Length: 414
Image 1 (cartoon, rainbow, N blue to C red):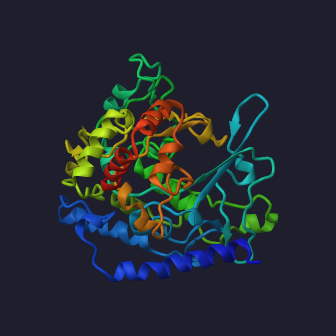
Image 2: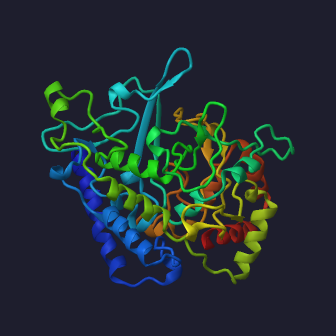
């Protein structure tokens, strides 16, 4: 039987080979998941392309990969800038103490599993006593800067944790600890903090990262095993012999310069929002009306305007990401027993729906929806909703098949 590392290597090779045909043909503009925002000036475009090069670069052991890692390049988990695949999933874990406190098991290589390793160094396994384990598909990357540019005050204004308006939707603002290195790295002119000094989490399935600088630094470190001045420690296997843990990957930290980290962050901030398609299709037009009437839009907000930031191309833009950036109770069916930041185990950040219809392009021709790819169709994804979305799911299920298909046609147009 193939061991785990060889299995993942074979899968990645097959995905790469399968992508050659896609890359050899020129896609139409409305089929491109990720591209530089067309409003960039010459200097901004050059910085975007520098970050793009880092995103596509395959790092080596000599450059600092490891000693344990998931991938050697960002691109392998976000093919063509799209959603990840179950074969390159992220596994995170932790443990619940007797007092009900959740720990990230840092002394046991938590909270993320790195299932590959450099030569001579053992790969990780989820600790036996981990009782909170979650499988996550990497997110699509289009339009992230515009999400970061949403004003904190607007996110706060959309929250209704006590369901004051009695619509069964009680989204709440995720306030999370902001590492010291994120200070001065925000693009918004104003941020809102709670009474503990915590900031609004904007990225991650459970809203753990406060900005794209933190998201980029964490991904480089936890996914590739590459260190920066922000995350200046190599991931390790706690079961490896002490001498191997002390040696690590043998490359001095930090392994990536601040300039390159800034370029990667700018690349993420300057990608264009995913394009819409089939907007004149009668089924899509009817489907959008059903999306609104069934209540999907209560969490997947369709339209808002970005705030003022230090990046002029992001300012005061009308965007349609279909998210409210809030945490919602999604019911026991989506409760994996894992949490991070401010989120409960059953709470998830409303994922943006823009680019949804292009998701299959980055997932080998098949869709894998929800946080862990458990739903293979958009119909299945709707059925997986629970908690606050239970009534909305029931509204969808009351529609006849023709109307359900129209609503799904609208989703596929995003």
